[in-house]
Length: 235
Length: 207
Image (cartoon, each protein chain N blue to C red):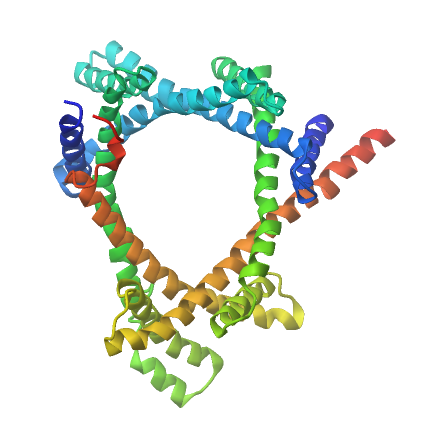
């Protein structure tokens, strides 16, 4: 185990050595990364798709005399094989068939999924919350006036601020060209405020995610590898 | 044959992609189509591997000063591939354990370290971008700092955690939701253009 832990530590340090400058150790680790990634992907494609979705089902279809299924699998495999025509100068146009089938299918697929998840779900989330309560709820403002507190203020203003934010950001993006409409001009500043708060917060979140990865690596070196090394050397 | 048939195929399969989701009678057909796409897509890997091989072979042939690293890529790729394939046919064997160790102690640390490295680079990028020259840049800076503080808040600094939660819940959600709706409309519009054959750039140039 110490051997593999040491390999992991040395490779992590080789990557971090880039902070000093681009050097052969970093390049070695970088190329090792590419090699392992590609090798791993080849094995995964072979085991999860070639074997599990082509060879095994074809064997099963032949065994169970499911010829319709067999023909479907063979056609898909033959279409996939057309990708290899890219290697021929004369016949490389044939690779447009699998490309257009893939692009066409996923485009059609994306029309429905994107409409559902990116538009309908988001619009719904701007009208009602997860529990189905409306975000623009005057009663919550009344509750805040009756018994003012931070939590009642949060409940009262968060929903309207969210709805307002979504509307101004949408106006800002859809009318990004110069526009003299007073509504569009009014939306400009608050939209930028929302966007900057959003981008700043997202940046902070991403940054801390990366830092936690760094802490994870340091934790591995100092709390897992180092004690194991001391234990092994110390006998 | 060279352009019309691919466009017709994109149209037909585009309609299938829509139909398998919205026509109840065709929903059972969805898994077959997803399998088809996985099978067809898997062969594209050959193009990627050949492109990588060609790139590194050229480096080696031209005796590039970094050709040693091209050997590193080749050897690791072949090693990973061979032990993985043998390990697949011999489960519980030494090869499969070796493949697992290569994944856990080579690929995972390299991946995590590579992403951790980005923390330092986005810091320097942020230093340049966040300089509080305008009030909007100041807002960006303050929001970023508050969220960073909020993620590691303790004791009296827990207030940053509450502010972070609110920032993520209201302004960030509003901004990202506006963006998501815009992106969604963009995806739908582009997909419709592809299915109808208006957008053809994926076919590449030539005849």
